[in-house]
Image (tube, rainbow, N blue to C red; front, side, top):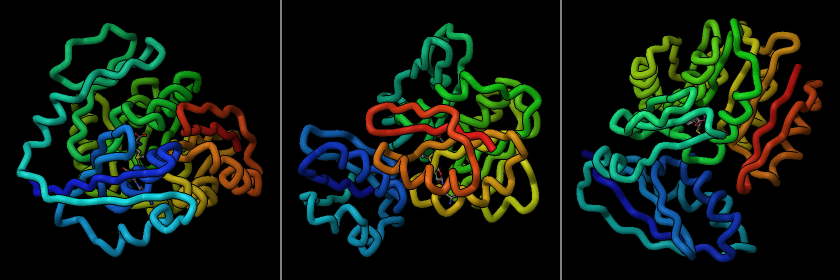
Length: 275
Ligand SMILES: C[S@@+](CC[C@H](N)C(=O)[O-])C[C@H]1O[C@@H](n2cnc3c(N)ncnc32)[C@H](O)[C@@H]1O
C-alpha cells in the first residue's frame, strides 16, 4: 500500500484544459484522476511528489486560465481494490474488449485482459481507444512492431493478437515494464519489454511504430522513430490534442511522411502516417 496525496484542482474555463492538465500531471507522476464539474481530483504517490515540478507546469503559468488547488494526504488505500471497484470493461467498435480477469467475458472477437496497477493503458483514456481503433484497420501480419511508451502494453498485446511478428515494447517507467510482462502472460502473447526511451533503439528497424506519449516527447523523438522505420512503414501516434496536430505534422512532413488517417475523440487525436 502506498501513501498518496490528493489534489483538488479548480479550472476555469474547464474544457479543454482539464484534459490538458491531466496530461501534464501524468508527466510529473500523477497516476489517477476523477473528473469533477468544475475541475479534477488528481492523485500522486507522496514520495514521487515534487512541488517545484507542479509549480513549473505550463498550464499553471498560463494567464488565460484560472487554476487553483488544495492538497491533502490520503488515508492508506488498497489501490488494487479501488481500481477493481471502478474499472468496467471497454468496448471498441464491438470488436475489441479491454477488461480485467475478474470481469465476465464480453463475447467480442478480441478480448484483452489488463491489470494496470499503476500503468497507463486500460482503454478508458481516449488516446488508447483511438490507437486501438486505428489498429483495427491496419495489417500487422508478420510485421515487426515497436510499442514506444507501452504503459500496460495493451497496444503491443493487440499487435501480437493481430499477427505481429517480433514486437518490442519500451517505457521510461519501471512499473510499466514490470506490468507489461504480467499483462503479456495474461494474454498468452510474448514480446520483448525494455526500460528506456527512443535512445534504446540503435539501428533496429520496424515495420510499424506505435507511440501514444505526449506532444513534447513526440516532437523530439519522431525523427528518431523515423530513422528506425522501414520504407513504407507506418507510424501511429496519439497523446496529442487537436491543437497540437499542426506542430506534430510539421515534424512529420519535414521527414517526408505522408498522413494516411486522422481520427479524433473528445479533444484527443490519433495520426496514422506512412514513410
Ligand atoms: C499515454 S501513456 C500510453 C500507454 C499505452 N501505450 C496506451 O496507449 O494506452 C504514455 C506512456 O509513455 C511513457 N513515457 C513517457 N515518456 C516516455 C519516453 N520519453 N519514452 C518512452 N516512454 C515514455 C509513460 O511512462 C507512459 O507509460
